[in-house]
Image 1 (tube, helix red, strand yellow):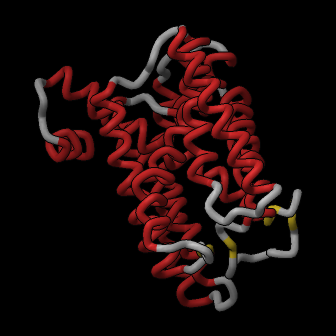
Image 2 (spheres, rainbow, N blue to C red; image 1 turned 30 degrees about the horizontal axis):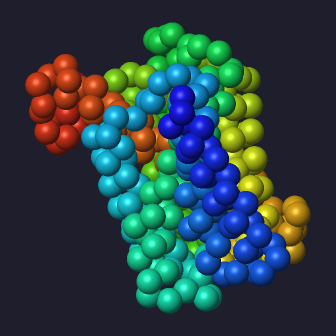
Length: 289
């Protein structure tokens, strides 16, 4: 309990300092302190309220690594390298190291801690149901097919904001694929919960996505640490935040990290049951069983 309170207090100090830097000084590198602050607030609150830590040290570093790799692939390769949907105008080389080593991994942790903490107040997770599993698997296949044809249509028929649509369909297909793999591995994930208790879990996802979206994006309206470009409807904003980013983009910024987290947890559970088979063995068995 004492450690949790210390984490909450320390995180609050960093969070307040980051917002002062953003709102008052328009400091273009506030986000590192902001995220670390939010992480300690949510981690401490989770331990204090739920009275247990749901990530072991080993699991923490596994999840850290997959968030780190996701940041490299999605941000550095697809956003900065290919689509150029956003950029970091004031960054130096050290800022980019901080971005991929700390900001992206801890941003992912903030999303899953937010979700787990709020889910605790929403009540127990639903039991597994065969019909929910079937609907979930069907939906993941639909997402992957939609993503494929959407990419093809975008490449050949869309000229304006082509890269934004390309990135959007890639994210959609990625989320479908991640859920498909997790469902095949352990037959239980967030998407199955959505099909079991639709209203409850849709509300949970929307609350986390849009509350976090406003918390993260609104200070940046003043600091401009990251700047958006090449996205449709840039003139439509909410609190100065591009509406497309807030109401569409932030859904993916919650769902993709949570799906990656579920993948790690699913593989760990399978390793405990089967004596440590490799990821590829689990994946092969899951996809072709």
